[in-house]
Image 1 (cartoon, one colour):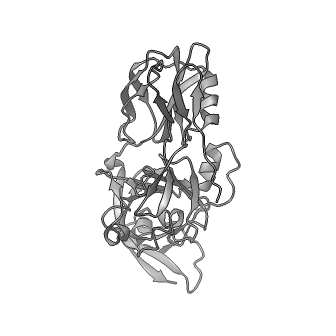
Image 2 (tube, rainbow, N blue to C red; image 1 turned 180 degrees about the vertical axis):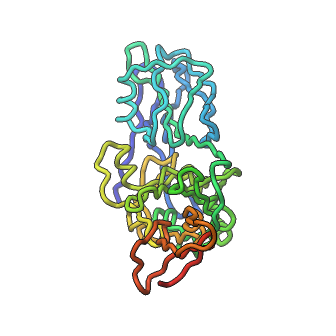
Length: 361
């Protein structure tokens, strides 16, 4: 059987054999699969007597940044005539096209201490070294995630059932469907339409205990944020899942409409909804990617990402309506909105004074 390959390039007179990015793969025995390697700089082999140039790039940038103030030190080889690049909001692969595009911006980087003040979300850091002729000599691309965990801005409103359809969709041949487990859900105090799921992929996740496979975790809190401010256009914000299951980097998930918009494409209509106290996302409406993998996957293929909000989440958002003692009952739907004309046989929140309960009208 004939197999394709990426050939190394001999640099005439230099004695350097160069292999481009993604020229190698490694066989991972526990998965029974080949996985792509050499994502960043490719591989170079200097033969004896070769003239060695220094286009090395070094910095330490943790994937999780729990402060908006991101600082690290950058150093690069003395053979570079100039370093260009910078931090870009969003996830961008270290492809030849992206590197060439960033190189054209000619946004110069200086070595030493780097300091950025960034809002929450996913970022990509490009460092591109140019030779004396202005050609790209080396590059390094890293992704990182910024979030400020201001716990005082959130309140615990109970638990929801969580059934994975993110890793289960992206790696269904390796990770079969697992049973749901309880995950704490929090609500933003100022924006009551904003929710977040707390550590859905820690020890409660069945995959963690059932399979003897790699599951690298960060030991600080991670959240999946859900913006249900518009009940008809619910989105899952770009969220760091906090686990590295397949050696391809820590997983990120977000709604397909917001992912499309970040790439300058039409958002589409695959939004989630909040109806009758249930947040649901349609099939194929979420995007999953890993910061060490250039590919992105459409997930939630089985439409399992549905969450029944605790009953108190709707009741507590209703303002009290009394005038000295008992008042007439007021009915709310399960999202906490007043219902002027309740429908017989439907479920509502009935409130009289400061007391509220679920009732069938």
